Length: 77
Figure 1 (cartoon, helix red, strand yellow):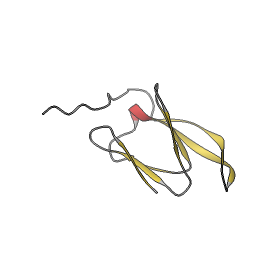
Figure 2: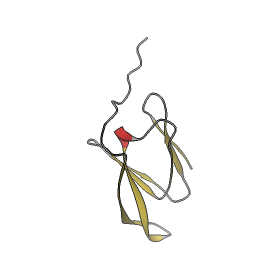
Figure 3: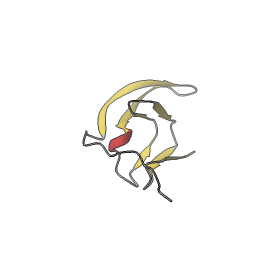
Figure 4: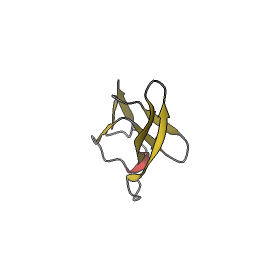
């Protein structure tokens, strides 16, 4: 059985942070990451935005995201 995974990117994983408005907390500076370039097992603590060519994922304040070996993004709230 073949497992497909998201192709790795040679782009920088970190992008410039930006202000994002979160319900209940207001405006916060959020880290911005490129999904395809996040190293395996890298922990990303919210508030954060994870972007790719096909989607944007919001990691709420207090949540933690990490990318597994298959390229999946696991978010613990």
